[in-house]
Amino acid sequence: MGTPKTIRIVPTITQQTPNHGWKMLIVDDEQTVIDMTKEVLNTFIFQGKSLQLLCANSYDEAKTLYDANTDIAIAMVDCVMEQNDSGLQLIQYIRNTKKNNTTQLVLRTGQPDFAPEKNMLIDYEINDYLAKTELTSTKLHHRVISYLRNYMMIQRVSFLHQQTHKTAQQVDRIFSTMAHQLTSAVSEVSQYARGLSSTQAKPSDEFFIQGIKEECLKLETLTKNIKHSVLGGDAALLYLHDIIADLMPAFDRLTQPYSPAIVLNNEVENDTPAVYVNRQKIEDVLLLLVRNAVDHTSRGSITLSSKVDHKYIYLAINDTGFGINTEIAENIKAIFKRDSAIKTDSDNRPINSHKDNDLYNNFSIINTIMSSHYGHIDVESEINKGSTFTLRLPYYQYYS
Image (cartoon, rainbow, N blue to C red):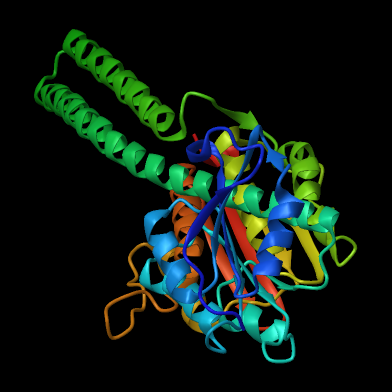
């Protein structure tokens, strides 16, 4: 292992505006590995932006660089440096101490027997595990593109979460105003009803009955406005099987890098009843759930299926992946139930929060969207056998 070097910030050759490029941290105590990586990536461009490479030879150098650049998109970290677990310490620092679940962490090692791939993927929240000798120039470019896409997706989910919170506040204000209007309308109905019960004259009956009808129409209009406010202006009668058919190319793109290890099956019936939904929001739910299934499945299948009862349509997303342990599953169900408390550790933090903040945020977004559609979501999971997330939405005739 080499001696620690001074900290260097090395932009690639094509980098004209360093602050506008994708930041990538390379940590390795072998300078030749850093130089080779720089050489391979010096012409890399993704979505019009090149890479700004930040290079370090030790844990301390990498920690200093990270603290000064918290918007790092990718970190490629050598496992064994000045200590046998220096790379793992850095990963723990980024994920646990700094609570960063966005940066794509890639563990690289020249000693795979010391740090077995299966153990590293299970025990540490890393996004990939690579042997230093296995990557060609083309493969490295492909991997970096994949990491950047994941980084962008997590940023989008975070943005959606923030927007959902803002929307919830706006909806609260809308409901406050509508509640006042509803109260006034009900008060008017009550007055007409009292007048109807206290008079015996036929013309008066007609007058009061007409007043009640008019106020009931106001209530109906207000109810529709509430539904419109919650679902958004683009809510319409749609068929889930059509939405899923349109999303299949996007689902295929999510699973394609893992094909043929992961097979995607669409078993949704083509005669599902219509539901009143905001298409964009339902598409966001389905994309988040399928991406979650892909992230938790190394091989096997992901299957979308449907069933219908007398009142609801049920859409299931099933995977044959790693499964979710009991504590995390209970926390997710607590999010779905809303009235249940999330299990916490001795420091009052959600159990496994260092690994599952993004997971909980995603499901909070999904639950908010499903609730706004008068729907529900549930999860069943078994370790090493997989998970099933089931969406429940009412038919249109039960929805209005």
